[in-house]
Length: 357
Image 1 (spheres, rainbow, N blue to C red):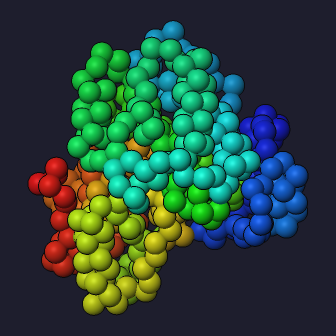
Image 2 (tube, rainbow, N blue to C red):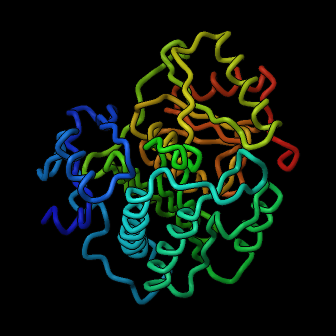
């Protein structure tokens, strides 16, 4: 299959190491927002090639997929949705590349919950691409919902109770604080559910040139390379990620969690500033686990499927129940460390916030 057809647009394939896609590609620094010229220089700097990586997924983006006459034909729908979601993510990622460092136009729930004009622009082009192929599907985008957990929970409940079986859950720029501070660590996140169960997940990291994609039962991939979670078996080997919550209460939970993990001496703790990227990196084996006390459905929908399709586990951090779109307190891991990590976090006082208790 022609690489040009799969990697249409500005993105090329990164050749993975032989084991799996654990190491992140090197990212060149730049002083201005990277337009097409910057991207060409960046490609040369990080050694991107046009040679397809060795992998076992010959059509990772649903290439040549068609809309089936029956939308309950889930295998066929997953393929065409994977293609549309990838196309839409690329459109959004192109805007992100051009406008890294955009000004904050307002805050939502509080001063930590930022919004730039680019968030709405990216969501708009994604929704337009989705509507072109699937005009009857429901669409839940972060920028269509007021800030705060109560509003996001209500918005999710509304769309899940509507008549359409298919729901697109989109975070146009996951990692907005990174984005507006010109840190190239943010992503487009698109999860697609049928009757509430995630069928397809796509996370596009434009600055690393990586498209993380997964379909239910079809595995998880980054570009052409199949993803596999890490092999760590003990907590002392574990590299764990967390976030800095948008509210004082959620931030307090993160600090309690870090204190608990420090006591059991995990290898390291990281805060990357993007839930989507941290979930994708769990799936890729770059980090062992990721926890957070309060996230929205658009933060986790795509990444949750990536983790499970790569052989990992994601559950409600507090109860241990399997992940669903309504899960707000999450723990995602390579599976082998999951029980011990959850026990340490819960015993350390980490809990869900008021709307989940």
